[in-house]
Length: 304
Image 1 (cartoon, helix red, strand yellow):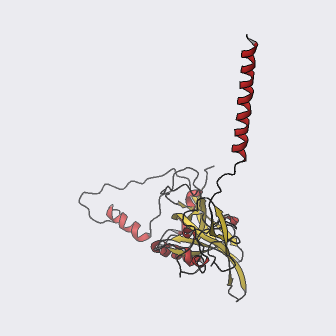
Image 2: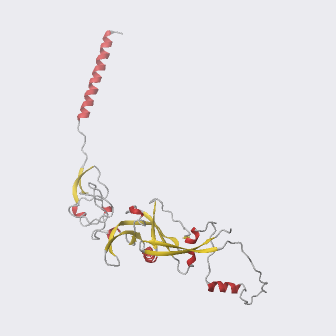
Image 3: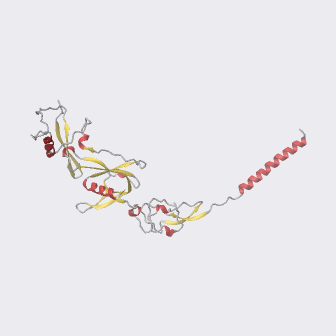
């Protein structure tokens, strides 16, 4: 190759590389366009649900870029409003996380329109040992004696309410029968007025148990309920429900066993035997602190 052409080629290559490097340095050293800054209301400390915002709870802070939707630009818009969702320190105050102006703070400010907050008194076991917290979903079970049922069958447990939101859970100071104060666990549930009536009646007349569920599980089931006598039935076949003497007498009269005339002549009575094993009455005493209750049920005896 001609040495002259080679020299021109090398010079062009070096010159192009130098120009590219200079352009790169000029672009890299050029300051970028600063993001727009704005002043928004942010939390000065962690704000819990139900907190009534005061002057020491919020402050103005810089915010770069696009402002969050619903962010407040003045302190006056956040003062004296209740918090309906937890807000962390330094987080912008969003209007959707605050109660309506004038509604105050506390638990009442976070209750939606048309709903009620019903307080349920529980113990450590019923309250799932502290795992029931605000925002959780629970089912409410009630257990007790069914009015008019046979005492032999024992108490019954039924699912009273399903998929109920927990508003708050904590402790409440109450007085016992002697007037001495003691701490009890209280769980506030978000219910409708009809559900509040059922929950109040069940809390006064039966025992209530809270069952924790997955917040994403919105399915409603129809459990049949369980009786104490069914738990001791090993055969898997539930015993027939015993009738009262009056109902049994009417039933026998309808079958012609008491000499009442029927439309068809009654067949001669034939003695019937059964191979069912005999039953015995059992009583269990249950002690819950100073309270004592008795549970009566029947068990089958295996023939020897």
